[in-house]
Length: 137
Image (cartoon, rainbow, N blue to C red; front, side, top):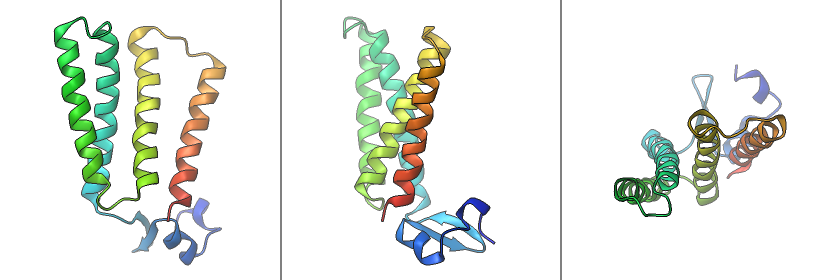
């Protein structure tokens, strides 16, 4: 049987939102490589955001070069992922990984506050991504 929290959806509903059932597992349509490209692109987005902060407005050479290289690679991998994933889904997941990743990096390495309101906001971003994924056709 499919995962319990998906049990309220019929198989047709899941197929419509970009999911398919295979061997009682729920899988995303699109190639596995597209999802790997998208995940890597999202991680690179976090890297370029962090290195951009470290570049101090592109006044430091090494972080500036890391920013530009990670940015280029991130966009390229996003473009590869969009070959088989829907635009809205791929872009929102990419942005979401970057937003949540930068939020976590800011807390872990830059000493940014992790108050209750910011954590709720991050949870809402994740919830929005889940809803976007479930509603993508």
